[in-house]
Image (cartoon, rainbow, N blue to C red; front, top):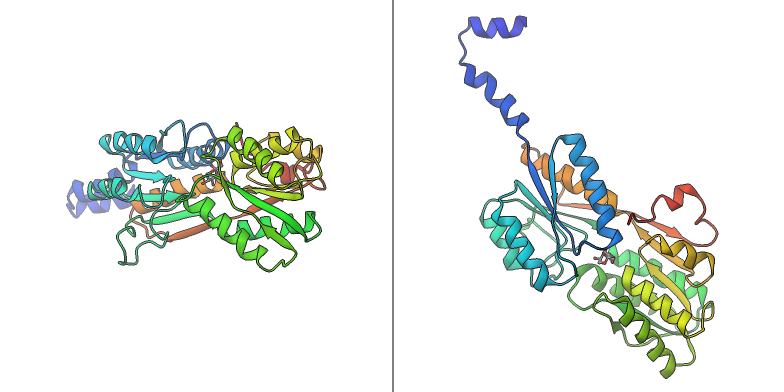
Amino acid sequence: RKIVAAFAALAISATVLIAPAQAQDKKYTIALVPGLTTDGFYITMRKGAQAAADALGVNLVFQGAPDFNPVTQVPVLDAVIAKKPDAILIAPTDKVQLVEPLRKANDAGIPVITVDTFIGSGVYQTGAGDADFPLAYIASDNVLGGEIAARALATAIGDKGKVYVSNVKPGISTTDQREEGFKKEMAKHTGITVLETQFNDDDANKAASQLQAVFARNPDLVGVFGANLFSALGAANGVKQAGQSGTVKVVAFDAPTSIVDNINTGLVDVAIAQHPAEIGYFGVVSAYAHLTGHSIPVAIGTGFTIMDKSNIADPNISKYLYSE
Ligand code: T6T
């Protein structure tokens, strides 16, 4: 009070005193556009984002498409841009196809941060290339995740035999990098043959049929790496339907709640849980920091929790299972 009185006595304009306070009181709206809405990974990311939004007094809007596809994601993004949020957090569904649609947001003065997936090379704010305009990339280290998956599968199959990657489709930064890391690591395991990748379009049923078709062609198949939630669920179901549970080993990326049963019954050997809530949390915090005049890291990496039969009952591990 004394300070205010002193300023008043100095006849400093009220606007000067009040303006910064008003700026801080502004209620920001941050939009989160997931890869798709019906995926435990993004549902969990939304929870983390909401926790940060609540703590910071930010209005969070969650708007996405029902499937993981640029054709359905771009119109959602256009609708979000038209509403002029203060910032956009987005998991772009294609490295190339989302560049121009996101440039529209950037040109409209809306800061863009990509979460989970990236556009271009994923290296932003360098002044190089035409896709470096997002302010930050917040995600798992997906190459490392692929390497971890390969080591886990190699161990499960006794370091020999035929395996393949069940993947979504080329052009998605995360799943491309997981496959890259997986193959890089498997190249060191000379007793293991990596068969051709099967792309399932994020359709678990397709992944299940593909498993059975690969097994029919290769009755000596010993393992599969499911490179995301639906690829892994589908591949595991395929193994079960082929009557090969426990014989054809499954390493799963992602951790929906159904993975617990699959691990306990021995259908899935290892699941690599990402930390999507952290991605959402740091996404909102980064956007807010930028909006309030702070500099932010151009890249934030979040971790993994490796789940198997030995630890899945531990609450410190199971807390990383995704929400539904
Ligand atoms: O694996 C996650 C995510 O990281 C990836 O980009 C797309 O698939 C998931 O959402 C799981 O379905």
